[in-house]
Length: 357
Ligand SMILES: [Mn+2]
Image (cartoon, rainbow, N blue to C red):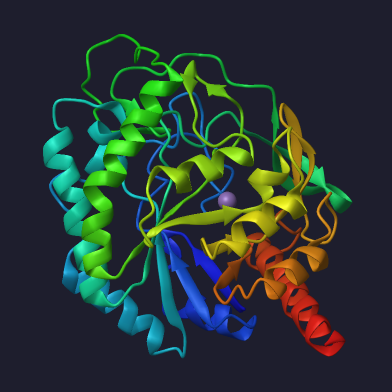
């Protein structure tokens, strides 16, 4: 098992690669979507929360990430002694009509295929994604974590419908006509995922890139009037059963799964790690479940993290764990301190587990 660090787009700097290595990481998971181009945010270094307008403007629909950019990113990470394990999340600018089944769907499926081929050519083995119409919406921020650390939580679903031009909590068309995105049925969303996987997984296999699906965050059955796919642990199995491809994999978020109302987190870890389907793991902790929960420090929530590590080890999980989110610590560098704390904890827990055996 390996320890990694996730970095937002603006954090992909030599300084932060060094920080990651100093905190014990051997791998990086990189976000190439800029979540901070609008909306109201706590701070650029905190996880994005946003408003009813979401996180703001999506990227440039005409500019797909180029092979040169991807290779340059991998090399700059390797220059600091780390490996680039995954890119996390497609840009809504590149695939909004795949999610919405809109008029540009065909062209945007080609975008997705192009991106996956380029990842393969650049030597990046995993593409993390979140097949969700409303995306990560409806969260609140406050001094919820231990010692009054700023953290994120949820108090019930956000029910306001999404305006036209918006998907996945970002604006892809600021000039869209007034109106709301019509709500669809849950089986229609599953149909869209199924046809997406049928189209894209053969390309992923050829490119040697795993497609890793994040569960819904927050895991509520609907958000902004739109259905969601994986809001209970057993629904992850439905994703795997849709398509037997070896590249149909999971971006396994312990926090989101623990926030779900059904099932048992340790059984879920057992079930999915035993099948060898975890591409990488979001190793974070939480107190409570939907519709009301709070993200906590890694050692301070409902999940017994060392127990999760033991299940992963027993089932031969050899991939990367990243902290995903962590509360902000009160100091000059709230994000970095929070992450360094989480990384130190995971390193310690991993070493303690090694001593046990
Ligand atoms: Mn996550």
